[in-house]
Length: 138
Image 1 (tube, rainbow, N blue to C red):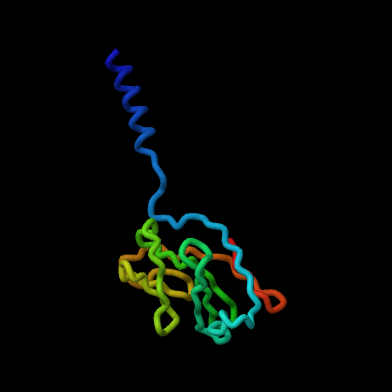
Image 2 (cartoon, rainbow, N blue to C red):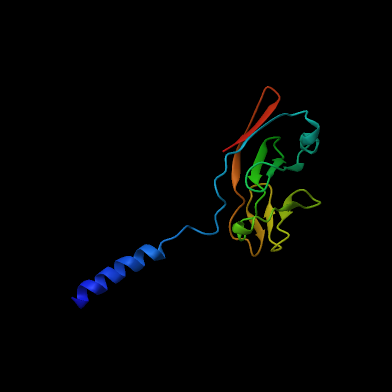
């Protein structure tokens, strides 16, 4: 009888110990579309330019113009304690962005962390350009 109670207790505790994965940016539908000549995108007209567009993703959408004239896009939500929804801010050099809550820095070239305490890259999104229109989605 005690053995059966022990097994039941183990099974019950196993269910309670399972939970949501923490430290992950949630999946939020992103469907941004704009003309490449849209005034909001003026900073993207030259390589190394970056902008943050609020209202998309978890904490906004970062779009970065790469040296080869292609684009990269990331969620502006920091990967350091993402449950806090701390939005990164663009740095003056436009090659990095900083989490004002933790001090972590991320590269805009590939989203990777360049300063602790960040250990995970920014959440990337797909970017397509066609007929002078830029599309960012996931």
